[in-house]
Image 1: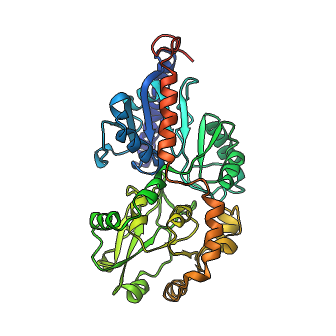
Image 2: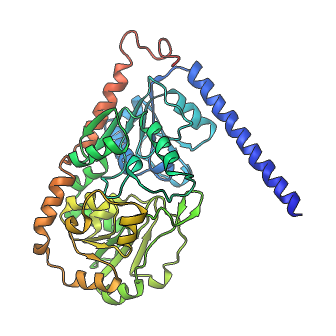
Image 3: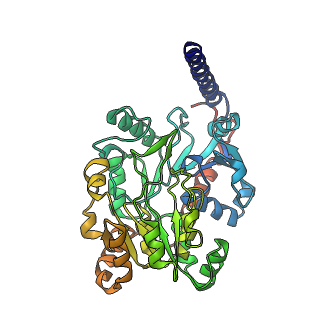
Length: 420
């Protein structure tokens, strides 16, 4: 029986490899015989796991301008049936036949992560890489160890990243600090755009009482309660498999509820890579869980304070000027072994750092904003100096210029733009 089971497993794996090879061969043929189209745009957020982040807000600006009626926009998703989009974008399921077709013919790619290296970008396709955060933790070519699932070696991971970043035509950043790291860590040779992040435009536009009240109703936050948002990052070495990571925390939710339930609620936001079935039922009415498919930008606006660890949410949330607390129970391991940092986190964090839940509780209860005002101002000046609430407009202007460029005489899609 065991031998037959192994045989079936081996046959299935061989069949999958053959099918993948055939599909990729078909993709290569499409890139050779089909024209790059000046009216097709492909957008993907967070590896297709949701429709959020920078690409989502670029798309929404396109809808606001009516460009979803001018261009054929395709949004790549793992589960299209679970995602609602405004406008006329076509939702395309990841790694199905239509996915390969639209990737082959698109004039513009927009992503905040990486398309697979097997999906070769054509020379006449413009790739706008928005990335997804200012770095505290080391990235890509700067990493000294690798603990991620499905990565055989550090050198292989770096080479894969280097090849991918070589296809990016544009890359955006929140600050000179981030731009310098991105250039080195990604070996990026394209054009860097210091324009801020589209996902943060709403932190400027919607930071008003009426909008915050609307969002609180949307997320069913009880009237009269203050809001804590807990949004930690993922841990490279703590996963279930197949790109699914655990919700890594040592927070004592019983202690948090006992300390704060009368006045506060706690929103727990998973990173988009986290898929954890942890049951929060015992803290019902105090803890509200939001999965990776929820757009954290709106949660920022509802939150009176943020609790995080090493996540780039710290850079975005600091735009609101509200208190931040850093629950860093594994600081030494994360900093010295798992990832490494680009700056002295303990010295520059714009809020208190704790290693236990009880310490965190005390810091929240005894918080005095004046003690962190100078540090918070320095943090904002260094790490999101390019943010001004107009990133979406800037990038959609760029997309329009790129698409209109293709319509000039001599560059008509379907004639000269056939083969790369």
